[in-house]
Length: 262
Ligand SMILES: C[S@@+](CC[C@H](N)C(=O)[O-])C[C@H]1O[C@@H](n2cnc3c(N)ncnc32)[C@H](O)[C@@H]1O
Image (cartoon, rainbow, N blue to C red):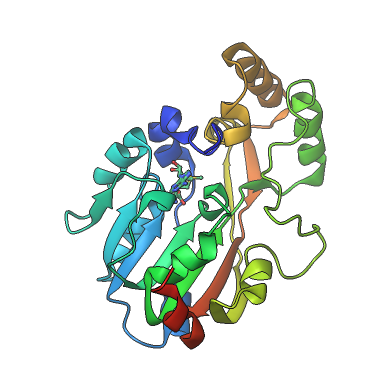
C-alpha cells in the first residue's frame, strides 16, 4: 500500500474540520437506487466518518473499515455508538459476512486494484448495492486556479489523484463507473452528480489543502512554503465548487454464484 494512501492520519483533526461532509440528498439517491430498505452497510476507508454518520443516522447498521488509527479515533468522536469499526485495509477484510450496501467515499482509489471487484461482490448480499462517491474541493474562479497552480508549481505539478484506469478528463463516464461497466460482477451501473457550491475563507482553503495527500507527501519545509505562497495569492474568501460524483451498481446474479467460490 502506498504511503500516499495512508498519509491522512497525520492530519485527522484538520481532515474532520476542513473537509466538507456529505448531504442527505446523497443518502436519498443511494436509497432510491437500492429500491429496498438499506439495513446493513460496509464502508471502505471511512476516515473520520463523514459518510459513516450520513448512513448511520438514517438507521443503517454501518461497519466502518479504516486502516489508520488516528482517523479511526477521530471517527469515534462523530458517529453513534452503534457503528461497528474495524481497523483494517479493505484487502484484509475476510469474506463471510455480507451486507445490503458496500460503499466508499473518496477512498476506493486507494485500495488495491488487484481483486478489488470480486472482493466487493463477495461482501454484498444477492441484489446488494455498491456505491462509490467523491467530491473534489475546487476553486470556482479559473484565474485563482491558475494563480494557485503557479504558486504550487515549484513544489508540486498537480495536487489531483490521477484516474486509476486512465479515463481521459473529457469522458462522460468516470472511474470507477468505467470499470463497473466492464465487470461481470455488477449490473445496472449508473453515474449521477450532486452539485454543490459554497464559500470559505482563503485561510480555510489552505487548511483544507493540508489534508490533501499530494501535499502530505511533501517534505515539511516545502509544504509550508507551498502553503505560504498559495495563501499569498488567495483573497479573504473564495468560491468553491464541490460537486459529488456518485457511482451505483448492483451485484449481478451470476456474480453471486461465482463469488463464494473465490
Ligand atoms: C480521502 S480519505 C476519505 C475518508 C472518508 N471516507 C471521507 O470521505 O471523508 C481516504 C481514506 O481511505 C483510507 N485508506 C487508504 N487505503 C485504504 C485501504 N487499502 N483500505 C481501506 N481504507 C484505505 C485512508 O486511511 C483514508 O482514511
